Length: 440
Image 1 (cartoon, one colour):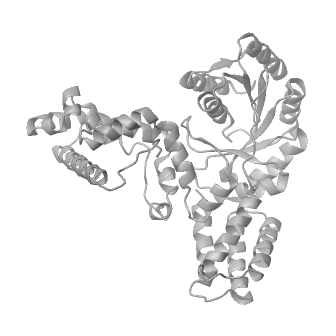
Image 2 (cartoon, helix red, strand yellow; image 1 turned 180 degrees about the horizontal axis):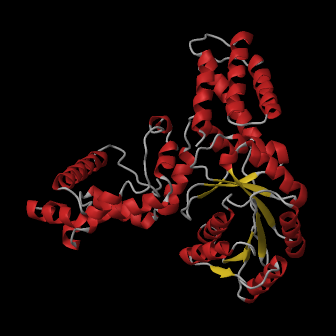
Image 3 (spheres, helix red, strand yellow; image 1 turned 90 degrees about the vertical axis):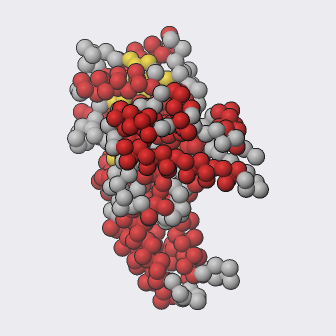
């Protein structure tokens, strides 16, 4: 996420490395490199210039405290300005009503239908809502099929009328259905096009006029850079949407859309999305995103993701087992499943300060645990609960069942034993180890 931008900003700050104080010359050189980094990230020139002018004005008048270096001060100034450029603070998402109606708009291929499923899952699991998703794309049959599959996957209801070619009536009928079945949120997935056209704009505007939505979310592919901002402006002129959703943040995102869209349309980014998993949807926090762009990580979001997946009661049980040195393969498998639900592994590692840069060139696939899961799945329940029972003959059988070499099984057993020893050492520490979801 924003890897190239992060590297170029880091390079810009090197102008101040070793400097005892900030002066107009080193500020000018740093600001020039920052502006170049923003332009390379496909940020509009006017926005990039205004941004760097603000940074320069603040830096020229700044006093360097003894406790921090000029470079650290410049990073703080840039972080504050990036945060402000992206909205300043979290924007409220309104999902209250009888029912609340949420209209989803955007170009074809931006990820609207996938986002509709993710939003329904978010409202169901995080907010306790009972959503109804609506297939109002009357031009692309595959959109109805896709939304049907997603709805089944997350366990929510879907409303569709395959033979009806009037999107407005489909939306109105869906709201009637929601009221009749006590659904308190209606999420309408509208049709998209490869490019903006009058038919699409008129249709989605007519749906808006008919259903009076609580929220109108414009979904944009974050990999399209400045083009995304131009498209957002055209949609906003017709729909006056309430917020933006940035999708595909796990791709080769340059950053132009995230940094420019709030400035251009004066509408907040409300959600960010990455990958195809239904759990990979996050509320957008400008300050946290600024920290990630500057290579500071995002521990707050990482902890929130962990707390959302790890039940406190189960965490206490697990802690007791670890303290008694009874952590087994089934426990390990359960933890792997929880980690996988948190999202893309490389993206998660990027939230740890300093780690994102270290793993930027490493290909970390979502199925990285597949081999380990296969080995544990090839064990009997007794073997999973009793790691010390794995004799050479048992290991050979496990290797054959998992489609692995015996050496790979032996290596995993060794790593598992080392992990248990590390947990044992943590338990002997004065403060004791703590686990996700646990509170002091």
